[in-house]
Length: 123
Image (cartoon, rainbow, N blue to C red):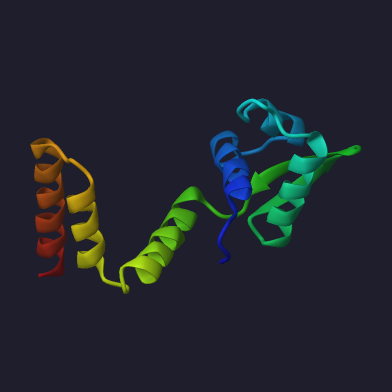
C-alpha cells in the first residue's frame, strides 16, 4: 500500500463516508474554496492508479467507490508513523502521546483498561 498525499486523503475521507459518489459530489463535500472539477478528477484517477478506488460507468460519468477501507489505511498509516518516528516501538509512540497530550484521568483509565484487556488476551 502507498501513502496518500493530503489532497488524496481528503478525497478518500469523503469516499469512505459516502461509499459511492461522482466527482461533483466529492467537490460538494470539500471545504471552501472548492477545488476545480479537473483537479478533483485528476486526484481520483491517481487514487484509482494507486489501487485505492475503482469506478462504475454511467453514460459519460463515473461513480467512484473505495477499494481500501478506512480501517485498512488507518492501520497502514499507524504502522508507518510508528516505524518512521518511533523506531517501530509501540511503547515509544505511547510515551510520546502521553507526554505531548494533556489527557484527562478518564482517558488514562480507558487506556489502562485497554492495556489490561490486551494482556489478558495474550495469556
